[in-house]
Amino acid sequence: MGELSEFVGTWRAEKGVPYSTHTFTWENTGTGLRGRWIIEAADSPGARAAAAAGKPTRVEMQVGDPWLEDGLLLFHLHGSPYVTEFRLVGSNEAVVGAAMSKLPPEFAGPDHQRSVEGHRVHLTRLSEAAA
Image 1 (tube, one colour):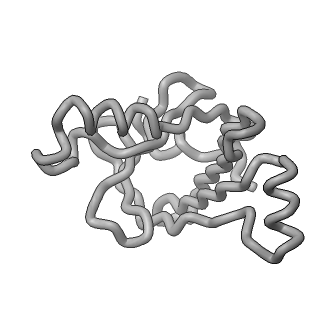
Image 2: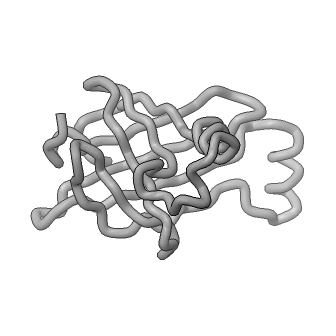
């Protein structure tokens, strides 16, 4: 694993209330990949009330230009200095979250590692052609 073409497609994590739905799309631009990550609130009375009040229930994450390193697709979110990884764990499964190997030493302790693991998003590929 680890070719850019293996990441292309639309991926989703949808566990239902109270979890947000994550949709991640990687598309081939001819010169590399472009990523799009959208997080939507799960349908619930609270989310419907927020929408009715004009509050956002959907956010698009700003995915920076990705690069391939050791079979991982790495990128920055919102211009952050910290690196996020998109890791394939099968032909139709992936995990996105903080790149542990790229974190500064002060974030390498067991408490931080548990937090990072707890915030990873497990995705399933919906399609191989980018939408």
